[in-house]
Length: 214
Image (cartoon, rainbow, N blue to C red; front, side):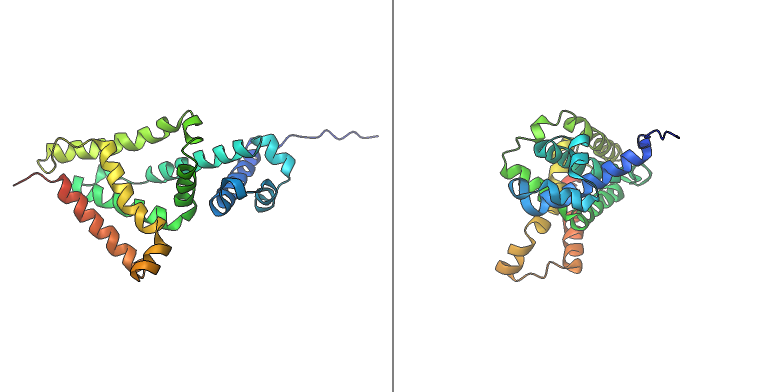
């Protein structure tokens, strides 16, 4: 009688499964919120069993924490593809603003996850131990762009990179997070053309803030 040894999934397969679960969790929590999300729907969306999800991540709160962390990881990973160092300082700022607006609009789960976590008082993000480290690379890159702008005599020398990124995120976040109310209250189109114009206007506002006074 031939015995068949049960082989464990290869590391690559396990990582692919984990990413499917995280994507399904991002969609589930961003659509239904923390309280309304269901693990069985996450399992269905990922094409795995509920026991497998519990094996990979643990309970619902742990899955939510992993999905929230993943939301930050993905935007930071995507930013790594921006060749900011090769661009002149003002062009680098334009590229970062363009990217930020596009990431928010193309990944609505990101905006929703941040809104949900803030409604929950930030209780989970405070428990994500490496959250500051995930953000540190971005802060460093923004700081380098600002330093180059200062060195070229283009930018003021009193701008904190974290404060400046908060300005970028704020100008890009609001039109996406408030799309429905902006349409209803102000009758704005909030379509691609309108968002492109907001991105361009935000860039000019931010560059005006950075530039040295004549």
